[in-house]
Length: 251
Image (cartoon, rainbow, N blue to C red; front, side, top):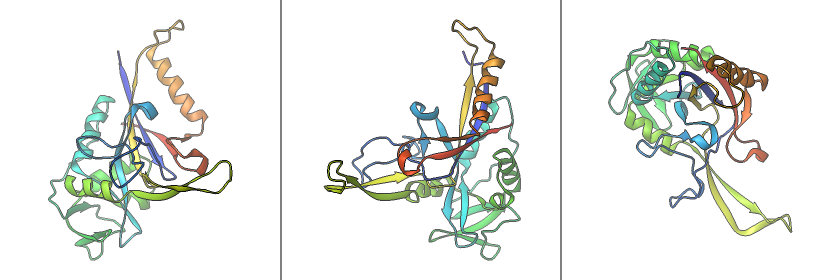
């Protein structure tokens, strides 16, 4: 029985491939996604169920933007409640092609529009409460706080489906050390800078060593601290993929 919970943030320092095996689509090795939304996730077999909260997208101004959407923000607030905390921000109502940005930002073109990839979005509201709270709780630098923009659920679903990194790779013949014939394959990655979170649930120990729930929680937190909060997750560790930074979200 779980009695306590804590939110843990995961920031991708390099492209991350938490794979789901082969697929019949155009990508041979896709990443894991929620069935009902198509949003990226990391399944329990890897690191409990991690959910996307901020997704980096190329921007005409400011290099890139951190996008999120009402559905993601709603789930984040619900998970914070489970962790005995509260994230007190108002979720904007947005239609396709609309966005909400902080008053002080580095991505707007003319104070009324932003351009993400090749798509234009109209600024219809400000989201300084969201920017301030998420930026603080997830440990973002001031410049990154100014990249946050909220777009509609449908627009967000399109970006997390079409704006991931897809790389064509080749298989090497172990005997010859050269490229194997007909061995091209494509692999999908969550881009660097992606930010996810996990809801970590704690219960008391039921083994021979009976320890309290607070001791279980402390052991977990101390373990994260002892590894300097940097771990490798997902596939392709030998080519430097899946390096992530962990931090606790205090709510």
